[in-house]
Length: 281
Image (cartoon, rainbow, N blue to C red):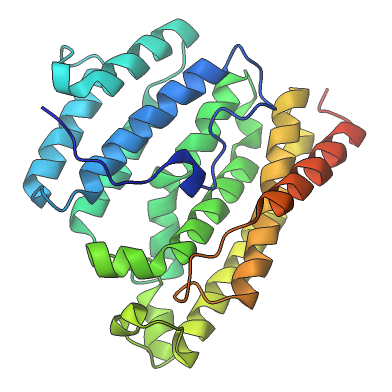
């Protein structure tokens, strides 16, 4: 059994994928986790599969990861992350939560409010940070700040891809109550430029995302690992820069992304910020 690709690559994501800032020891496990996440995301996004078939396949991935089902040839990434979890001793929860999110994607096309969207992000984004925290032996004390950062990065990714998500998948992550209050409709997402109503809603999402980024700023101070603290600080700076760029640019006209120079600047500034700050004892 094969699972159709969504066409997305690591470069399309705002999340760290085996960053060189992280220890060589953990990078293979992170890559395995990412491949698992990408595979099940492809299942949820496949136009060739029915919602029922998507959920059945995602359930099978979950069953293999938690050891309730034997490995199958078409589920190699589930088998690989299961082996990785056995080596590292990490809970399968951070994988299982992703399958919950992607089962939601299979059947849920709209989000009624910001709180509704955050509920989704707690399954689709927060597990990534929690997995990294646990992989590095960090305390769950850092989870709230990590959740805020990952959820912010997820929303920024949704805003970057808002036109594609609607036109290809009929999926809209903009809060519907905000859209209705602004006098906008989802059909406007197929246009080549943001309408005034959509611009207002995008800015509302960015306002709420900026609050998440503020909550995430303490993350690097809650982490004992210097390398992970640097990575967290870099990601906070990337999120801040992306938020500013999305305010100044139109994601319907073209995908808003940082340039290589801007990523490099975030990497340098974020790394220095973490290096100069005291680590958690």
